[in-house]
Image (cartoon, rainbow, N blue to C red; front, side):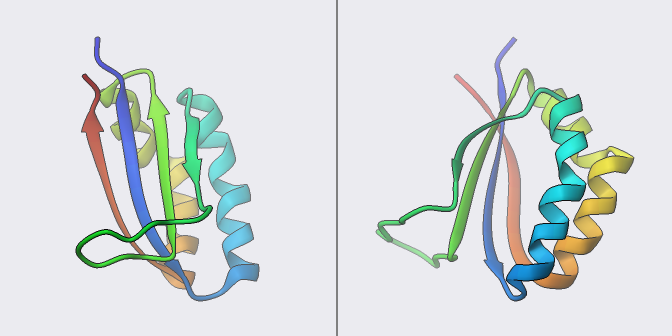
Length: 95
């Protein structure tokens, strides 16, 4: 079964409150086997629109990635994120 990956591009508007998002999301990530492959860090912008923070998270499967996003634990965190950051998020299937 192919792994699933969250790709998130984020512009954080309130860094202090964003920490609340991270703490609230942690149980969902642990429950669904998330492994962070990239989290923030330097970016080399090549094409298109860039955001300041880029995250890649690996999950055991595409379904686990989707289930994590839809879980009550993550949705509580998502409400915080949506208040303090602008984000583009998607799930892709690994090869």
